[in-house]
Image (cartoon, rainbow, N blue to C red):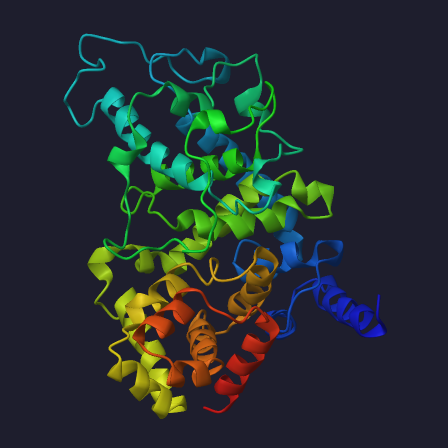
Length: 400
């Protein structure tokens, strides 16, 4: 370990060691990248995403309360109508004359169950594709959810629920962007049938199943937005970071902590996923246009070239902005970019500058290329050095 690296770790520990964390100092440190050592990144993200307050004295009680709340969500929402759960204090939901599987009443518990299945199938389809070039999400977690998997209770896992349903996932695809493809063209395609996945023994669950549960509970608690394709790409890096925390006491609660950090993050970016808000000032169209207006200010020649070729920002910047660049780079690089994005005072203004930096760094190729070549460059970004990109974005920020 270099002396510079040791010095940076010491700086983080000094700030985090205070009874009240100095948020401006922490933001400044995090902006330049957070060391993985000692679980520093996991802790810093929890503070930056407003899960943990700056007052360290309340951390213990708050975490206990939030994790208990998440357990309650599991009890209430991962259930199957018609199965008795008396041992966990959940009332029996029998088939009755008033409420049965064919009941058309929208308030029917059975009707809710079937609608939830539609959402679940889309989530299941997407989480199985999470970072297919990495084995992590297919591996079993060290901390399976005992509340769900304990043979002493009657809770049904989401895995079984998906396997038992007769609905076809193709009929429930819900792509937030309409004709716009939010998936990366270079991302390897995941297997499609359940049988193509290694079946884990009873009592085990893969990391992707934990992510599935987080997204399902989020969808249940937020019916206005529910689940939209692409949310899996936002929760993935969060969960990976918390589930690989070197501190086992924190790692054990990666699921609950990821859920609340994801919920807080979505509160800030959820408008990107709501199509009816696209053209509002908080919508994705406004943000894409802001990338181009910033580019015009910083590099008018490149801006005019893209305009001349009729290359609209929605052809590439939609995915960059909506998914916080999570599909443009390898996961470790995405995590490094997110250090800076989460540390940004004006949350995600820096993301616009990163997008602008990505364009200016390939300006020569874009100025020489035709429409087809330039679209290929933008859809499959050629520079993998995120430190170079972040440095350029910081230069753009400082030149304002």
